[in-house]
Length: 326
Image (cartoon, rainbow, N blue to C red; front, side):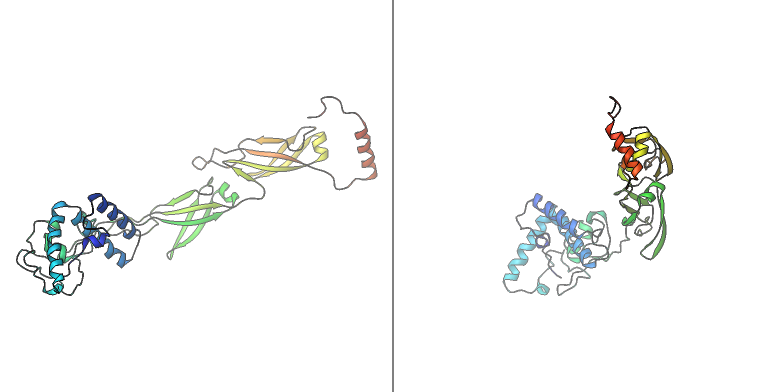
């Protein structure tokens, strides 16, 4: 049977304090946990070793007995002994553990077991020294079969890119995840960073446990026509010079459709009009919408006829009445 160096497994000295052992265990358990290393048998075996070592070294009585064995084993090894010839009987209740493997092979009694080892089994060395799952000493090893505890499936994440218009109206995407075809509905009002949950479409559960969820991570593309600020939209609206001077109305193409904007006479370049309820829908209440802010951009004529130039010159020569401009 192979002697197991629990201190080496946790990477601590034999004089390590309880706090040092706890910190080393937590660090290694996070690194080798099966949820972090799915389908990795080497990591799973390492996780079992770490749990077993912690179970012994974190218990004062088990650690005392283990240290006594370790001291005797080291002294014997220094005398040139071989692990297969060591007299284990004085430690294992007068009989070598049944089913123990000579020559240094590490054997676990099961893949899954009681909560005391985080749901994982123990080695022959542990059961031979401490009895079944750490009970009273002197009990010989008995091969046991533990059923796997139900484990919910892993949550998955998948990136989705949509247009601003799709974010306004909502969208549908056909996805292929691990060979499975899914139709996903994206609700109105999502923004970059929003996550849409598809229940039960994640990784499969084990032992009858439910599957995990699939989260769609949304990225909304920039739109050349609108700038989104929260649920408000901001846009520039081109208006010809004459409409700005004399007043009139212009068409504004919002995400919800075309609308008319009234332009008062003498509207200045850069003036902003607020169109209530014409912005983006609230994600959790689509009937509630932000506003659309339309900023006027005066468009000058590209050319003037002689008559138009003459009229503009006359206009420029006349004094502007006080209060006649904004």
